[in-house]
Image (cartoon, rainbow, N blue to C red; front, top):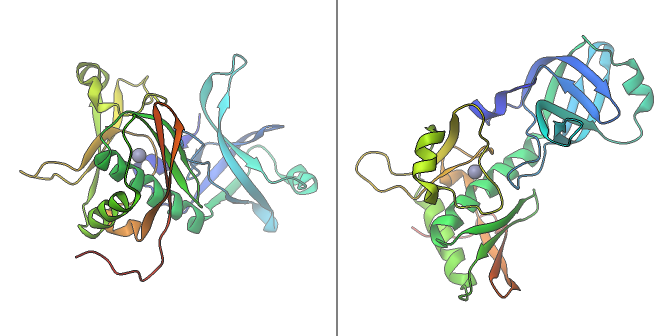
Length: 257
Ligand SMILES: [Zn+2]
């Protein structure tokens, strides 16, 4: 099993780790800072730097699967193609430094956190989600039209309000008793340990929170860190689905005060 360091600290850029397994699907380490594709968020890229200058470029990260296709507790670091001779030198038991492409991951964290703000602005069930470094999209199960400019302004306001994020946990039983906390129809929160990780945005003390939901992804610590994001497109994906696409806004664009 791979210890997932990014769950307790999304800002870790690297860690030392031991190679547990190397097979045709990728490299499994005993611990990692690489986030595996899940909950709509893309898997991390980066490199595994081993002894004697050995460096394996990692193109993607996935959850390993068992023979029946069910995810296991192992995290697979998927090498970029064309590195056969480098991979041949890497041995089980080697100590490597696992280093993520931080610039790319930080964009994923900013967009991911922005999708939680969208859940506040559009309080409808989510039935699809994809978060990449270039864009993010959320599909809402709804029939009403959405206003692109109003949503962009709402996002800018919530970013400028600088709400802190708080990572917590809820028991499976409490979650079962409050099914409305799960906003996604397509992604179920990871269970199995008796506790489900939660993300709260704002709402410390007497204030109502902006958003609160179970989530296993990586987020920034404060909405201010999201920076300029805009709704670049709204599509009517089906009669009952409205797709909201987020893009990066211009750096230095005037912030709403
Ligand atoms: Zn999240």
